[in-house]
Each structure stands twice: as structure tokens, then as C-alpha cells.
Length: 381
Image (cartoon, rainbow, N blue to C red):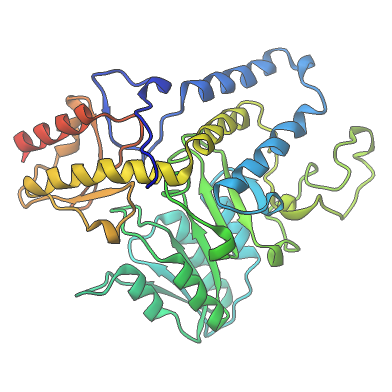
């Protein structure tokens, strides 16, 4: 059995009176990552200290670490600022025809919906939403049943952002390959807290924003690009992704050749001297803890918290059907519309999505945080 990770609150700037149970909205940066970001930003106060090598060293060291998070090769990783940037890149490189379908989940996050609406409109494909399953059917079962010969693309996540319900991505990938469909994944709500093996799932494209479960800064994320997609067309045409860009004296020797692997898909101004050092420190911490151990530790804590929630009439999905790091507690009828505001006033931070209270702790949370939440909910509902 994987050892539990001891509480890590000392690594974060979270006062004792704050119960922050909302990592699915915004993960707090570790103090060390904050310091790395500050040091990087300070370079702009004295830009003569920024060397040519500085434009490349952070991406060179961070790219293989991001690959380790998902068991991929370093040359499959590209730097992106957002999910929408990555999905737009994927949409530009997936050929669809009229009569084919694009499958998405019900209640999918907007950045993984609007782009497919546009692609369907441009190609004549049909955008189909896989509805909430009924009876004993799981979310994965519903998606697998919907994939057929006409399916050209499946776009989904590992866990649903509203309640943490998870998908069997290996099974979905196998079904996609059997019908020749592309697979695009948004792992923003799971990467860093839930094990994912790119070598087994083999998506065409995968993206993760770094500001949630990766505990990194906003506007810094990464995209996985499968080998067979790496000759595609990037979303933008910038200088740093081109072959020979390390030689600033030769930048006007324009070339149509790109750097190796997925680098052609890197965003412009990828050499962010503040965000990348901060993200790298956060990723180092995740790798040191181990994603499998993080998942196991959060699962143990959430199992106990789910039992407490069930006792007060707020059941969560069974552990087999949800991400171990994620709790979506069903609110009882009559729950006050300002419930989250009431909790915030008591320094307890969670999110509400419809009739679900989304509770997403991390390694910085204590048993006292959980107990305070339960006590406050008893009073409020």
C-alpha cells in the first residue's frame, strides 16, 4: 500500500483560521513557487541581467518534468497559456467531414465546448452531447455507447468539473481507435492529483492548465501532442519555435523549419521569466510527493469526509465512480441559495455547481478544516 503523505500546510501561506477546500477553482501556490516567481519577475527591473540563455533554460528544464507527470516523452510537450489555446490548436489539426460527429459530455467546461461548436459549424460535422447516464450506467458507459462509426472526435476530461465523476480514458481511447476517431483531453481538473499514463491512453492532444491541481500560476499550462500530430500547423507563428532560434544574430535568416517534437506548438513569449520558474517549483513538489501518493492520500481523507457528509444528508458519488481527489456533495432541498457566502464568512471556502457542493481539499488541509465544514453545514442546512 502506498504510504500517506503527511500534512503539507507549512509549505503554503494558509492561515490556521482558513479552511480552503476549493482547489478545483484555484490551487494555492506553494511559498517556494511564489518566491521563484518573484525572483523571476524581478529580473525585469534590471533587464541587462537577462541573457540569451535565459530565454531557453526554463522551458528546457521544465518540459521533461511535465512529461514525467503524465508518463510521456519530453518531445511531446508544448507550452500553452490556457485550455482554449490548446483546444484551438487541436481543432486546427483534426480533419472532420460533414456527417461525422463530435462527442462531448453534458455540462462540459466551456473552453472544451465552444471550440467544437465552431469546428462543427466549419466542417459540417455534428456536435453531440452525451447526456447524464441513467440507471446503473456510468458516465464512461454512456460515452462508450455513444462512440460509433460516424464519430470523428471525442473531447472530454478525466473527471467532470462539476462533481468529480470520472471517465475510463483507456477504454474510451480504445473505442476511439477502433472507429478511427481522434481523442482530445482536458486534464485541468485531474493533472497533478490523479494518475494518468499518456503511453497507455494515447490521446491525440491533451491539455492541463497549471493553476488548479498543479498548484502553479495562472496563465501557465502545457499540452501533450502525440507523435503522429507533431507535423501539424501551430496556432501562431512565432520566432522562438523555429530551428536555430537560440542564435539571436541569425533571426532574420528566416526558416520554415521548427524545433524538434511538439515545440512548434509552443505559445509565443513562452519564456515567461516569472511564471515558468514558479510552475517548475510546483511541478518539482508534485513529482517529489508522487502523483500516485497524492491521489492515495487525498482519497483517504476524502473517504472520511464523504462519510461525514452522508451522515448529514449530503451524499457524494461512490468512490469507484469519482476521482479520489474530488467530492461533489448533493445539496438537500431547501439549502440556502447563499450557502457558499455563509461559509466564506466563516473562512470556509468551497464551490457550488448547481445542486452540488464541490469540495476539493489538498495536502494542506487538516482534519480541523473538515470538521469545521461539517459543523458549519449542520447549522446552515
